Length: 167
Image (cartoon, rainbow, N blue to C red):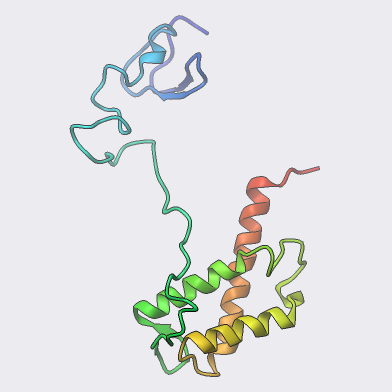
């Protein structure tokens, strides 16, 4: 490494942790102290209590949780609009739950070439579960499977983009 690192450049410290230099020129010896002596550390700043808007640290929402009231024997009363789309808080939970089901590798493996090739028995099992647990109208069946297909395709794309190696 050089003795002085250019202003505003991303550098790597000896421990291979990224350090972003904004207004300070640092030598390689002091590069490891990027945030040690500073109040600008977004992760370890305990006096402010929250992450600052300019931080390079960003946390996502985390994994979606399953609907805890699913399969408890009580039908959920979901509001529906005129196009058989679920609305309201329970509608949001239903659509999130359907997205969780599509990410289940036992029900819908990533090796499926197309959503249209999904096992019909599995789809009927899911539809019967939706009918048992909600007041879903029959017009929602096509919408349900369409939304699940979109969710499955997006999940398959994200997994293959992030984890599959190109040959």
